[in-house]
Length: 160
Image (cartoon, rainbow, N blue to C red; front, top):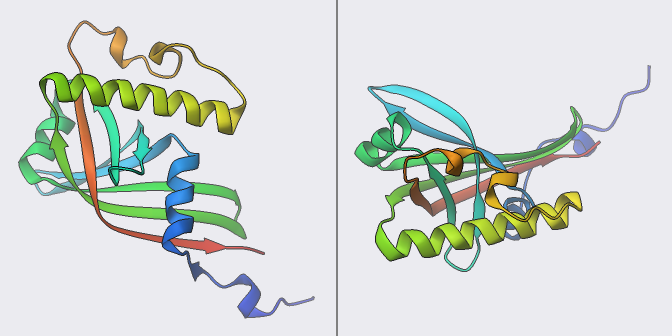
């Protein structure tokens, strides 16, 4: 049985520029938050706003928004997994901010346009409307637009 050099298969740190690239190339990630002392993780559609150094998203009012508003600290993870020997993963630590009024409308538009561009670049699809990649806005309730201000970012990768 042939063995590989451990150096070639070791998990390594990503540079910040590589972390930001992975965030920018994707639009689905996992949001982690605490409620009543218990951790929760939910997949979300997001847009990485590189200019503002934040993650933009939205949600219906409810449990997740209340928990993030109460505790403020959240984590966010994005992965690109090709195999057990070839993957990249970025973990963001940040602070939740609920947006309101004209700021919320502006950021929701920025989110929508950013996700559409990311999908077009990544998947060679061209969604025209937010409903093409998210069902939340078809609900009757007004969405809660929020951002996660990035306070720390780390990434790991492994290549075979």
